[in-house]
Image (cartoon, rainbow, N blue to C red; front, top):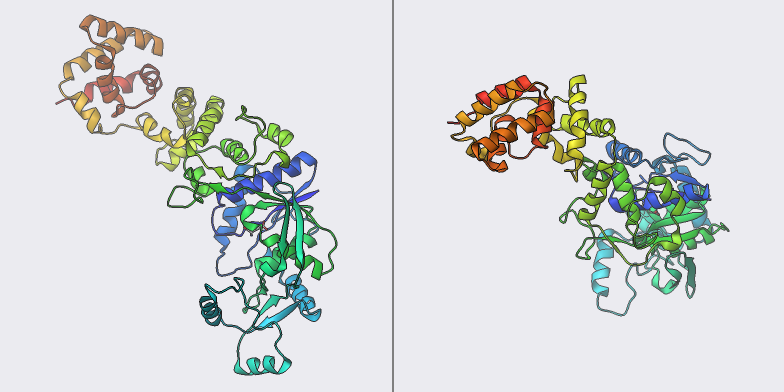
Amino acid sequence: MRTRIAPAPSGSIHVGNARTALYNWLFARGQGGVFVLRVEDTDQSRVSEESYQAVLEDMRWLGLAWDEGPEAGGEFGPYRQSLRSDRYDAAALSLVDAGHAYRCYCTPAELAERRKAARGSQAAPGYDGRCRDLTERQRSAFDAEGRSWSLRFRVPEGRTITFDDVIRGTIATPTSQIPDFVIKRSDGSPTYMLAAGIDDALMAITHIIRGEDLIAATPRQLLLREAMAIEDVPVFAHLPLLVQPDGKPLSKRWGDVSVGAYRKGGFLPEAMVNYLALLGWSYDDRTNIFTVDELIDRFSLERVARNPAAFDVAKLEWVNGHYIRSKSPAALAADLELVCVEAGLPAGTVEGRRILTAVAPLLAERMKRLTEAPPMLRFLFGRAAPDDKAAAVLAGQGSYLTAVAERLEAIEKWTAPAIEESLRGLAAERGLKPKHAFQPIRAAVTGTLVSPPLFESLEILGRTETIERLREAPTA
Ligand code: GLU
């Protein structure tokens, strides 16, 4: 059993492709199969080394290790289509020789012109077959004009191409609905249809699990196989589309659509994988949290839905919160260190790690995204002028804060419970409600009104620093 993910590198992976990669990976892992990564970078105008690396990085971050592919190697390589042009050239040549493909001399402008003229008529949409039966003389005339040509596949007439999709059932397409499609562009590069179509065969892929947007490619790729006398036919499963909550296709205008954006947005890979698994697949109606091993164990194509799956950031955040809470303080501290350093805090030191490990359990309950942490932790890495809200709370509190400082100096052991007892005592003496007693302290020490729980925060910050901040807070 062999599955594959075949991303075209154009930056960080789209979440829809990440979901497709995950399903292929889960299916292969669950069945003891092989998971192949093939990079579809034949369209040189759109790819860069950077976006190629971004694909590998996203896959690694998600934990979707590939058995064969770039860096991993394998007996069916190379796994970058830009390195396989000899195969595509040979395939194209043999298709032409056998009469299954022909040169098309139509220019993009001519094609557009004729498409426009055909609009509203009864003609099937797509290529009109103009160059399908050119004579040798007509071809020479075009060549003499210096016209360039692309290669088109000659779709047989009067047939119906049928395949059984694991998710969508039997799908039958009359060839009258399949215009002669391009297999090689005029610059000599192979199209997706040809390259992916023959690579799936050459790489002995047994299960093609991909997005429903590619369903129209399947009869074309089956025709290519037939024309090349490839007898094996893989199992097909076309996954439902991911849509926005309003049912429209995921778009950048709506929100983040790439794995990289979610990574930068403070999501854990465990949460991303768990949530992506639920986009189109379910185990039962109740369970939402699955470890990777549980997913491998339970995933099946039979339980993939047909209808589109809505990407719900609130639910992803809920899943993320679960994984944040289930981390050990040390593990969460390591994640926090990355986001804090990214946010410019000097957290990447031994002392920084100690502070983050201490504060991690306090934050875990309060975060849906790791990126919420740096603003709440800034006070642990240096003083900052109070923000507007904190400044307003501090006004006129000079003598109260001095009294607070004196109480805290007198505490025997600097622990959160001792700090709490002393500060509640002072509040009771002065008849202050907790909010009025504690907000000025929070404002003086953290410079904001949002922080982890106060007493624990003061314990972590340390006595000397706390008292200095209380005494020096701007209260005028
Ligand atoms: N390169 C194609 C894509 O990224 C792969 C499609 C396929 O899985 O066949 O959409």
